[in-house]
Length: 338
Image (cartoon, rainbow, N blue to C red):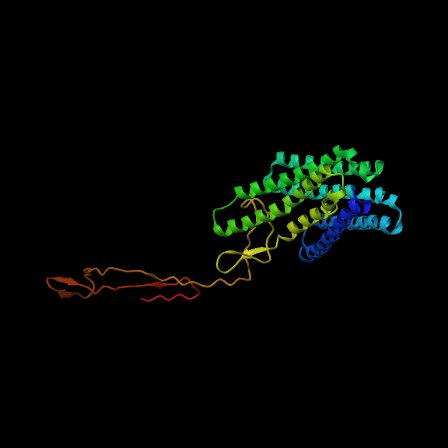
């Protein structure tokens, strides 16, 4: 086994770098959200702001933990073997952020599907992983040596396993609902398919990261799992912000297909119309006027009119008939010929 700097702080350094990179993306997404969705409900805007504050604190704690032993304790090898209270804040903050994001998606599943069984399972798994994250933070404070982290495997399994299960249930519930409410119209189904792909991408990435983190933690005593553990909270917040900001990403093009642009919500506002409210008429799009011509044909019939003049035709008398033809248009102009 190598030095503590290589075994433990190498993965920690890589994990912190990914954490900071994802935090930069989170800043951009938060800015775009507050710029584009000023009409969202106050509670949702406060929710996003609170998540951003939690993400900022998590990023600051991770940088502080990396700074303290490598700079303040430079040359002290024993300091590299022990996790401080600052490191213990990471599983706690990750559990809190993951619980908030999963509860939000559980609310979305409830609004879209009204399936209380699925919602109850998601809430239970989310609360279980929240407790597991807090328990892991307490265990790190009680057993701070990195080499002894395997002693509290059970609480880590509860944390990461239930986190992955909750993410998977959310993804399955949303995809199942969207697939059931396809209309058979190519334009609508194309938009629904894109929403399904976005849901799978944002939902399964957190589940896969948690599963890989758990497997590496159980398989190897080294700190490789920290490469996936430290950025996990940022993956949750970015998946949520990506979902919120994608509410304006689809509209119809002139050929009748769906194209990317400024879009409607993917179903939070009015989920009862088609199961998901994803289509909205583009008021700025010019609809070309179409002219339809309907020609009415009338058959000429000889009618004997005793009051009017009659003309001999063979052995019969007849009166000139009138032939009327009408041309109708459905545009802004109409022409009638008599």
